[in-house]
Image 1 (cartoon, rainbow, N blue to C red):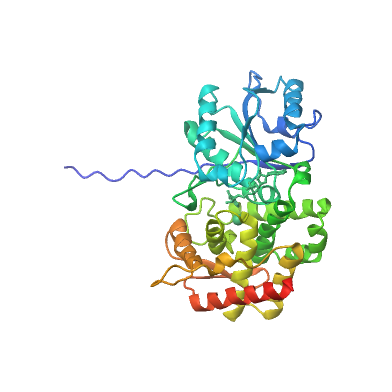
Image 2: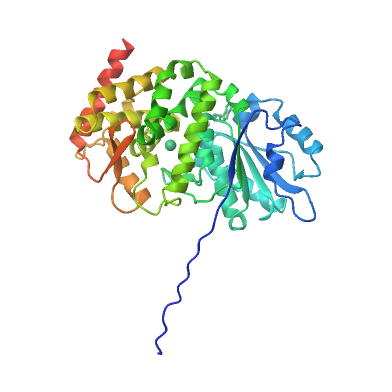
Length: 395
Ligand SMILES: NC(=O)c1ccc[n+]([C@@H]2O[C@H](COP(=O)([O-])OP(=O)(O)OC[C@H]3O[C@@H](n4cnc5c(N)ncnc54)[C@H](O)[C@@H]3O)[C@@H](O)[C@H]2O)c1
Ligand SMILES: [Zn+2]
């Protein structure tokens, strides 16, 4: 055979999307949504399929009527293909393919194409699932996210990932697919249960701890106000947290996570496992708060993090109202293995990233350090310290 040299293909695709912050997205005079819809030369209205998290629809009884009135008022710019589709919210939307199938079926029935939009309104779990549906249909239809929880507004809803759970593993199926736009409406936050109000703050603590000491100071000094649901402070926390996540995705030179290092997953190796070990009784953010606490105590036991910094971190999380210990941390595998089930999370985390196990530990507030090996005996000690601290706090 004649010698043929390889043909090199090199692509780089720019992605641009805006994350808007607003209040009352579907009030008729609010143009945030309209501004995100590019008009074509013929000025045809954008075709939109709306999907709503049932937890949101139940707590915002006026929402569906408001959306209908908004669509009518702006019919020259947008056309809803059907009444908003309601799907269950929370982790259950990622644990089966039911909602995914339902959305794909609607995309087919209503001929949503790559110039149309899926607009998803809901918490992080439902947005992850809907984003996955959008990425699969026609190899990617346009997605507008309207995150309705603190966690989704400051972290999951502004990034480039989607997914569902499979084989008992978090986010086993999913893609990297940047949205067309994100519309953060702070009004949604008023109806959150306390635990959903709180849980997203864990992601803000996480990103502050690894990147931004003044932001950690801000959270620490406003922890009591945040626990009492001060919306003005929360808006600042969400804005800065979203900004730090977006900066990292853009500036870290690895938006689609080809490398093994994932600083934004600080505290997450154990968090993902704890969610699974508790049958998703724990919210993602609640598990992240525990994961952060655990990795910080371990950092301290490894002589990386000072005791003063550790105490500030743990007491801030406690003032925010987080539990730092769960009995699931001490679940054992049956003999002869006898290992803590939690430690399977290390292996699963490595598998999910690929390559070498890479965990971020803290050396001080604002600075992390990657390690590739851990001492399980020391981690077990860290768990017992959190347990004792919890018992002491609860007395
Ligand atoms: N894609 C990513 O990059 C990324 C990052 C972090 C987390 N996540 C994922 O996000 C998920 C967690 O999301 P979450 O913390 O937003 O919780 P969630 O989506 O599980 O929602 C929690 C509950 O709140 C309800 N709800 C949503 N908005 C509401 C509102 N405004 N008022 C009242 N109730 C409302 C939901 O129906 C649900 O019952 C996890 O699956 C996690 O893995 C994804
Ligand atoms: Zn997270």
